[in-house]
Image (cartoon, rainbow, N blue to C red; front, side, top):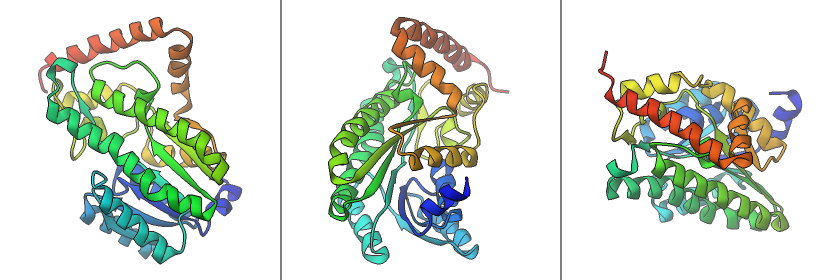
Length: 284
C-alpha cells in the first residue's frame, strides 16, 4: 500500500468479523501495518486471540472478540465495547461468511438456514450495530464482504449466491441512504481467494463434492493470496468505491453478466458440468 494510503488508515479504528482467518486475518494484518487499531471478532476466539497477540507483539493495537454474528445482541455489545474502549468506530468490515455448496435438490432446510443466518443476517446485524454509531459520529465506512457470486450467475451454489446477491443489494441501497449522514458504504466482491472457504471452511460444507476435489476446482481458477487481496481491497475502500472486485480480471465475468445474461448462464452451465465431473471423480 502507498504511503498516502497508510497515512489515511493511521489511528483509525476497525471492527472485523470473521477476522481470525482468511480474508479477515489478512485485513487485520494490513490495517494494523498501516497504523489502524483493529477488533478481531470471530467464533473461533482462540484463533482470533492468537492473531491479536501476534499483532500486538509486533507493536500493533489489536483486540480479540468472541462473536457469533448470528446473535444480534452479542454483535451490538461487541461494537459498543469497541466504541467505549477506542472512542470511535471508523470501519466495520462485515466479513464473516460460510460456504455451503451443492445443487438445489441436495440442499436441506438446515443448509439454507445456516447460510442465510451467517452470510445475510450476520451482515444485517453488523449494520444495525454499527450504523447508528457512525450516524452519530457523522462519519464511518461500512465494508460488506459479498463475492463474485453476488454479481454473476453461478452453479451448484444457489444458497451462497443468493445470500451474496442480497449483500450486494443491501450495500448499494445503504450506500445511497448513508451518504447524507456522512457514512460511506462499499461491498467487496472477491473472485477466488486462497482461504479455508475454498474447501468449505470451519463451518461450511458441500453436499456434492468432496473437500479434496473442491480444492482442485478452486486452484484451477487461479486464487489470489489473502494478503494480496487485502492490499488491493483496501485501496478500493480508501477510494470509496461502491463495488470492489478483486482480482480485477474477474470484472470480465461481471461485464458479461450485465451485457448478456443468456451467455453468462451458458458459462455457468459449463462450470456446472465441471463441478459434476468433480463430484463423481475418485479421491486420489
